[in-house]
Length: 149
Image (cartoon, rainbow, N blue to C red; front, side, top):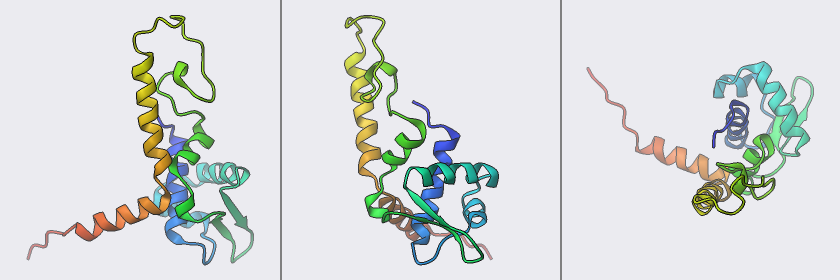
């Protein structure tokens, strides 16, 4: 399974908005700079996320983007499935769009690929953006820069 660049950037954009909070909208240029996302690509991604009900926008000088839900109720898996579709290492184990196996039930690996899909789903569906923010803060708190004089 491979995550597309679009999905990767969508996750980063949602993270930036989650970290920013909902006090005031975040400008698209700030998201692009903070997360190193090409701004033209980000415009398309945010438009798609808005269509999915994950973000809302406000126009004008005080405008920008914000999440429609709290970071602790929004999972990485929701964003991944919305942007890239089903999470499955091979088509035959997809839960939402299974493809008939060419081995007609005689595949030696069907169970294995199903477990791989389930393991990935468990991780992305149990990880909220609030979890990612907390994890990042803990990692940064434990990080000690080496200072040389």
